[in-house]
Amino acid sequence: MKEAFAGTLESGDILVRIAPAENKGLEIDLESTVAYQFGRQIKTVITETLTGLGINDAKVTATDKGALDCTIRARVTAAAVRATGKDVWKD
Image (tube, rainbow, N blue to C red; front, top):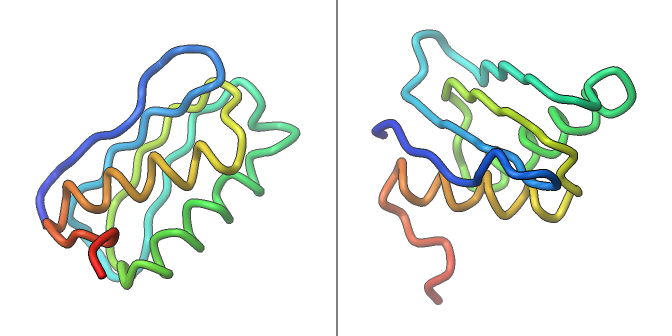
């Protein structure tokens, strides 16, 4: 795994950075304009997306600007593909 990014800092989007883990497990650092209301949900979507892709050890930094769950999943998936080189869209 190498460091990779996906997303932007535009309103309604999220910038996701995935890097190799320093420790076992997923470490998620979230900065969000809506963290008080939706921080737990955002972290859950990130965790579920990564574990669904078979990534259990990674450091994730996410800067959210009010992204919907579908956007979060898309950005996390894109960053994971870039970080691992594994194309999840192939048959």
